Image (cartoon, rainbow, N blue to C red):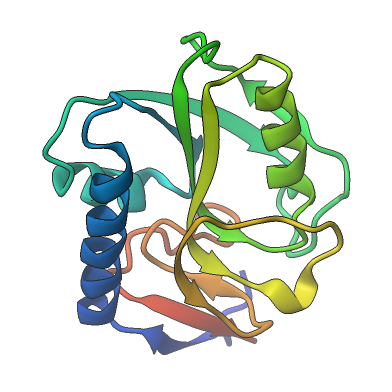
Length: 175
């Protein structure tokens, strides 16, 4: 990491908290009686997913998947790899995929198509942030926190080469 890197706050923690509360309200209205399975995409979504689940006061299940398309680069490689697969079956289940950021759309599109082959009762995507200006494949985000500019973001689970996940705000990383 370049020692000249600078961070500028883009989304302060109070705005993140308000967005998580709003998303929890929307999801509760749609799923309070359906016992959905929430699938967090690791590693980036873990803080967002934890905060979201604490605001959902109905029965649900959790699972995690780890996908990789970045490595230690700032740009996606374009090839998606399942590093850690699901432990639960999604067949006949109501599924909500929870993602920290939707960027090119390649990774999440790959994963949603993978899940569809396993016949869930329903499949929705909840994303904290959407960098739609970088989209390469179309993706429908059913529950969205923020649309963000085409900048490299860190904090609140988002990282650069495993750094900065701990920051409570979402920041722009500038070099």
